[in-house]
Amino acid sequence: MLRETLAADAAHKKQASEEEDWSRNWRLIVVSNRVAETPGKGAGGLAVAVGEALSQSNGLWFGWSGQISGSAGSAGPRHTETSDFATLTVDLTQQEYDDYYLGFSNECLWPLFHYRLDLARIDRSQLKTYFAVNERLAKALLPTIRSDDLIWVHDYHLIPYASYLRRHGVKNRIGFFLHIPFPPPEVFAALPDHKKLARMLFAYDLVAFQTVRDRENFVRYAQEQLGAERLNDGRLKSLGRIIKADAIPIGIDAGQFTADARRNAQNPDITAIANGEPDHKLIVGVDRLDYSKGLPERIEAMDLFLTRWPQYREKVTYLQVAPPSRETIAAYMDVRSAVERALGNINGRHGTLRWSPVRYLNSKAERPFLAGLLRRSHVGLITPLRDGMNLVAKEFVAAQNPADPGVLILSHFAGAAEQLDQAILVNPHDTESMAQAIREALEMPLSERQARHALLLDRVRSENIGWWRRQFLRALISDEPRTERLLSMIGPASTLPRTVVSPGRNYAGLIPD
Image 1 (cartoon, rainbow, N blue to C red):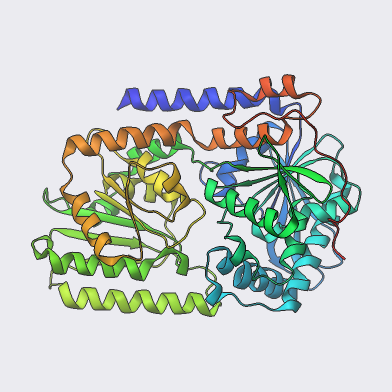
Image 2: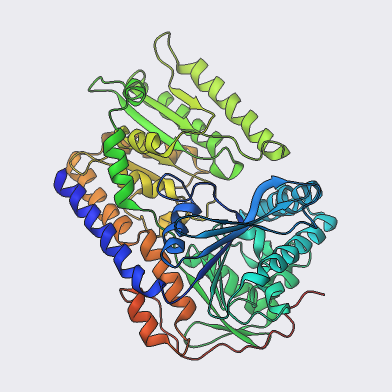
């Protein structure tokens, strides 16, 4: 165990050292919808992903402060210096929050990009606000941009962002990373002004996606709707521009998560949940309460499992951690009601005075606690109906004890399935196959669990968060005049194809009307 800790720490230090030299030659500007209050190891999601890169380049993180203000439209951004990097934040007005954030971003783009046209609410006034907020946020950043900055824009809230920067003369390298799925062309085309939105993506130098499937959906749309030509090296030519479209899956800080899991596995609260009896098994799911996560379907599969194999009653507990999100949106209220009904049904049908088959935590749990919980679990049940990546699947793998690992059950429709193909892959819409997968996981012999886990862990460790950053930044700068020197500074060679022809600087047709 000590050897495992030392190896993970050494790998983490090596990764940081590789990035330190090259990052001093650039300043990285990260643009995202929200700026994390406490970026660093204790945080989650994007904060962990970019915090280290920002600190190494004395970078700048720009985005919404999370605050709503009546004077937001006229007030300037707030600049804050930390010991490692700076943040620049702006407030939103109530109308902007309602129409840009809750409205077009989360009631239209989010469901549509997750293939849920039935839940997408299309409102052209909200679309107008979406464009207007992106333009205001671009103008707020302009005075701080230096000529050699790299700009890294994140996610669906900010698709038009580079287009507005270009309109004001910004010629810097700008990359975009989409954290959620990109839908097939026929689904994306259901958006109002879908061509206008897609043209704006051609203002970036690099557009990167979580999976090959997402990248190919975008490429196919660009070919069918924008007349794009796919060049021999995989780049796209359209609208007088040549851009890169790549699949660069995000990773986790695997070494840190493994260490957190070991340290917190004996937490008394986790011990109480896990039940110390040798023949009792713990199944865990960790998801935001979102209709894309397939929670009612998962509970129905557990119900069928206990019906088909009643010998597991009182010998297995399924714990679902599902903190609420976007609670004012009707579709989220509906999924909460559906989950609670399914919970009532399964616990009423199978539960006893001393045991409930499903336990449900509808609140946020801290990352160290979740790490310890995942280490004590025998099965990770990660079965979204559609997901850009799903980092919990990778965290489950990193948390396990290699000598006696648990089994990951993973949806085919999670982006992580492209990398974690040694998991038990399931169709979350097929209740019977899900139930059978639960049984297979619980009965899998130790030798098979160890073999699967070793392959999964190797992938999670090698394609970690630092690998993701290096892949993205290499792809973004690989055709700059200083390519050779800069690439050598970034670190290990990318597996992405190298390109040497500089994209054109023609932005005609990319600026919104």
